[in-house]
Image 1 (spheres, rainbow, N blue to C red):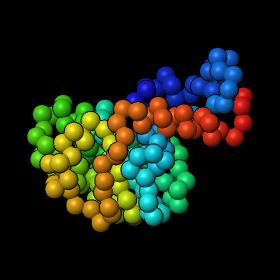
Image 2: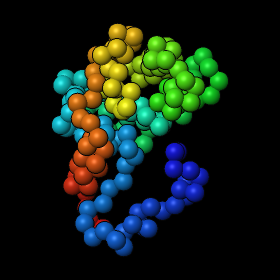
Image 3: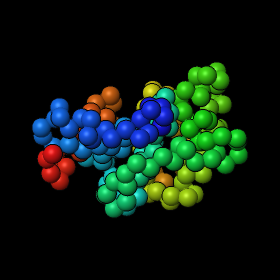
Amino acid sequence: PNLGQAWTSTDVKARLAPFHKGRFAMLNDADAVAEAERRFGAGHADASCVLTLTVGTGLGTTLHQNGRLVPNLEYGRWPHPSRPGMLEEHLSGRARTAEGLSLEQWAVRFQEGLSHLESRLRPDRIVLYGGIMEHWDALRSMLTTNAETVPAALTDTAGPLGAALAAVSAPHAL
């Protein structure tokens, strides 16, 4: 969604295939991060349902059920439960910056959205990733969840690593 309307009907696979001779997989950035975290980062331990939230320019959301990625979910596009607009409009790092919110003010909004997602998806574990995690030590005491909530273990390498994992796991080459 953050790429703009011009990409909505673009056949990305057809456009990239002539330049790529090996395995080919497509996934969004949040899915890539979650795959890397599942395999090499925060992991999933014995959790059967894991929600990964990437908080940055937007709000990336990924769900793993029984270790399997449920691809291309855009929970950030869900309506906010108590504010006009979508979750992403209120929970992203961009929203915090644009509105000049303190960490405490933003955490109240994030908690509203997090509770909304948790009540509907019922994850056993929530993994948080993105620029906002530089404030994890302060943020963790401001958030209340039923699920175990942990910071992502990987940093900027998570997205590329997850994309590489998807490519080598692709069922066939083009």
